[in-house]
Amino acid sequence: IYPIIPAYAATLLQKNNYKVFWDDAIAQKLTYFQWLKRLIKNKPNMIVIESKTPTIKSHWQIIKNIKNLSQTKYPDWHPKIVLIGDHVTAFPLESFDNCPVDYVITGGDYDFMLLSLANHLTKKTKLEPGFYYKKNKKIVNSGPFALKHHNLDTLPIIDRDLTQWKLYAYQNTNYKYTPGTYTMFGRDCWWGRCTFCSWTTTHPAGSFRSVSPKRALDEIGQLINKYHIKEIFDDTGTLPIGPWLMEFCQGMIDRGYNKKIKFGCNMRFGHLDQKQYDLMGNAGFRFILYGLESSNQNTLDRIEKRTKVQDSRKTLAMAKKSGLEPHLTIMIGYPWETEKDAQTTLNEARQLFKDGLADSMQATRIIPYPGTPLFKECQDNNWLLTDNWDDYDMRQPIMKSSLSPQQQEKLIQSLFKGVLTPKFLIRKVLSIRSPADVKFLSTYAYKYLKKLKDFPSSKI
Image (cartoon, rainbow, N blue to C red; front, side, top):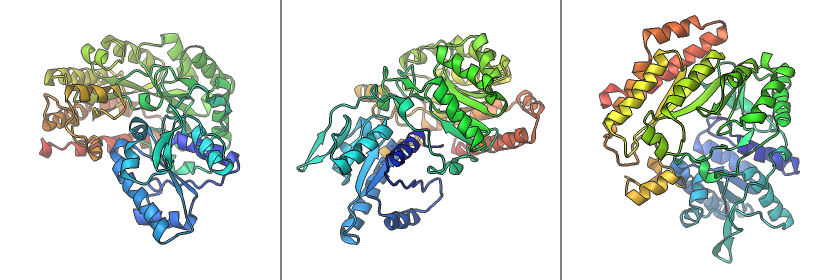
């Protein structure tokens, strides 16, 4: 996945005359030692690491290694190391106890904030709110992070060459047409209340902002004309609706972009009507990701989705009528759900596929990431099975549940098997219109088989 906000950060820093080195060793498939050797060769003054809960302990060790090398073998190198992301936003002090990090940035606007830090280090300007750092051997902060004063329209359009966009343009299985790329026209979700979502940690409810439709269209124009992009997925938590969406769609049509590119986004059930979906279809939209999460109303209410079970079927029918290709996300392992509850969700998902209302899906265990209301609920109810952050990678349950790990695996596997009906396969084959369709279906089949391998019968 193209790392959008780090890409904005790199572009913004370069626009302000800082020399930037884009260092994504994972995308480049480097070993740790290959990456470390390259890092030492470049000797950056500031190293920024975006971390998540299941990677934070590894990043602590990496920071220790870098600091040790700089102090013992390269005494002329004094890098400032910065941690960013939702985990350190939730627990900003924790990293100082576990590694010699120099700065922790809280909140999700670390593009704006990294420029603030760079200016602070080089020009002695005042830090924005949201920084944690050591001063006179004590950890201090610059105040609670604030997002609303950051105007997204003031950010430069991402420099895709600087951020090596081709590394991310072909392997994402959500792309039907390549090369593809990501945008992020809003931060992050205008709903912003789902208790399981880690984006609520970095972009709390009430902080939603978006670029103007014109700015969004200008960026798409550049992606088409300069980079010959064929498909875009916008990673805004939920794409803006209302007048913003209408102006954006009409702009796609008026500029002729709808004939040159396909567009995808995240959307919520129950917020758009048929006329709006028709406009999206005419504007070049294709892939629409919906969070089904559960088909039990009690669960939807408890996780603050504020949607109704019946909304999903109505919404999907409208989206399909407009020629869109819906993708569903489903979660298993809620502490309050029984096996019957989980089966209700899986049965509904299978039926949606059987009825031709969904084209693809993903099913995972629900993970209570630190900083989310769900994590706090787990603490209050003694639901957590572990606080070893390495375990928060979906390989095993993190919350107590009436379902055993084996039952959860069996349910997820049964969903992947259950949607692959003859009717679904025939519908997919009949949808083939081009070589791109063949390639996409082949990739989809590989992804599906890999999911079955992730939850093999031998483990059940």
